[in-house]
Length: 395
Ligand SMILES: *[C@@H]1O[C@H](CO)[C@@H](O)[C@H](O)[C@H]1NC(C)=O
Ligand SMILES: *[C@@H]1O[C@H](CO)[C@@H](O)[C@H](O)[C@H]1NC(C)=O
Ligand SMILES: *[C@@H]1O[C@H](CO)[C@@H](O)[C@H](O)[C@H]1NC(C)=O
Ligand SMILES: *[C@@H]1O[C@H](CO)[C@@H](O)[C@H](O)[C@H]1NC(C)=O
Ligand SMILES: *[C@@H]1O[C@H](CO)[C@@H](O)[C@H](O)[C@H]1NC(C)=O
Image 1 (cartoon, rainbow, N blue to C red):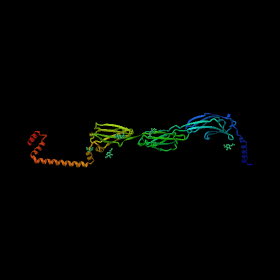
Image 2: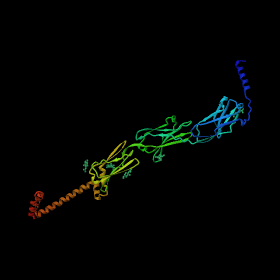
Image 3: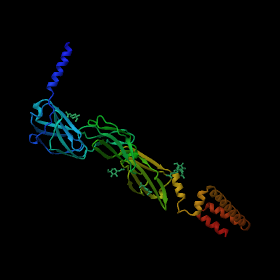
Image 4: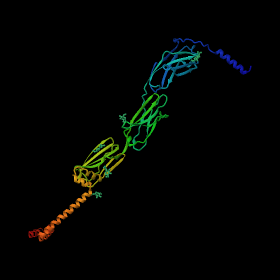
């Protein structure tokens, strides 16, 4: 017999002799005891720790044995520990990852020898409340056209990571995704970063960071403010109303851009102003007669800049034409300038004809007196006396 063969035979016999007798005993409940907190309340996402102390017959439950925590409903093992040393057996702690909201019942089972088991009748009830930690969103000051970083910090949990999503809701209720779900490796340290280039349209919209965990979905919404330079908007105009000239200057900006009217030469005017959302509406009223071919200028400014406009004369003239204080003929001529010219020429011709006819008629009747009279007219202002004399002569 070779050396190897003898070793194999030896091992075989040794194994046979050491195999314990597979006799299933019925464990005595009095010998088994667990000391544990039977009701644990915890918030979803938090780690769960169960500390316990066991008493059992060490002569029967021999090492190695297993301590198995299992869920009563699903019968699934949640924690399995193999004990090899007698010393470490009595006190123990079992830790598990966070659980979704709900009620759970855990039991402890011992396994040893030939499928020998004992389930402790005392169970641990775990009440898990909803996950409540909303992400923290940091939004810097935003100015139109300047890209910024928005940060979303998801609350750290016992295990796993949050999936972060960003969305935006506009005033009309429409929502669009800015950045979709992705696995965030560093959320516990830095959170997720959204690069954002604000426009004036983004002002007063809501940005939401959604954090999705296995424990639930939480979100935080922030209302964003975007600063922007003033811009004169299309409501701006000048109109003649009766004897008044009314000019409106409307300007949109954030912060609200006040409107001023640089009217150095005028004193007789009044200004009123209102604002709605980000628009300032300033109205200036003055007698239309004061409006001597000057342009009305309005200036609007805020901390980011200034906008100004000269409300053109052309528009003033146009608005003047459609004003109802003008009668129909003026409107008609105003609309057809060539007719004004023709009419004027005809009037002039008629007048010339009338004068000529009159002169011709007079000359034929009183020719000498007419000449004296002309002379008298020329001298009138200087020689009042002479005029009287000559006039008398004429009669
Ligand atoms: C022990 O249990 C396992 C499965 O539960 C089974 O396959 C095996 O036959 C059992 N052994 C004995 C000795 O009862
Ligand atoms: C933004 O959120 C606030 C509070 O959550 C809400 O009152 C407001 O209507 C929202 N605005 C928009 C544009 O969704
Ligand atoms: C500004 O005033 C004009 C004229 O009074 C008005 O038609 C317009 O709606 C106003 N705009 C705002 C934003 O208040
Ligand atoms: C108004 O002013 C402009 C330039 O200041 C000048 O060219 C134009 O002739 C003026 N019009 C009248 C009617 O005075
Ligand atoms: C002023 O007149 C010009 C030229 O006729 C026109 O293009 C412009 O739209 C008018 N502006 C307003 C505010 O009516």
